[in-house]
Length: 62
Image (cartoon, rainbow, N blue to C red; front, side, top):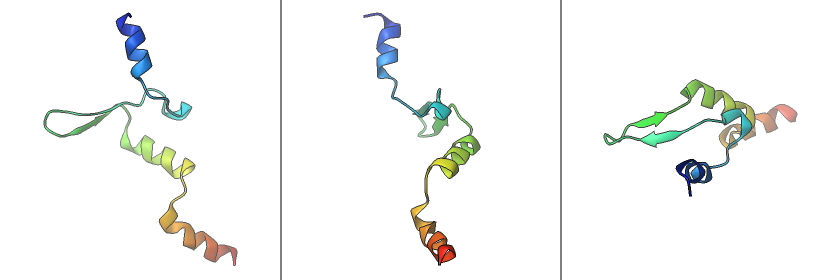
């Protein structure tokens, strides 16, 4: 197999909004990401419901 084919198979499937996202831990234990943390937080805020704040939404409905 060619190197490109192996690399392509190893990449995980991600949401289209996070296409190109890559995360690694370097030899010093530091996390290195290909995306800015603010972009990731914005994505999570729009796509994931915060379970800890769910009770606040329930209070507004009643």
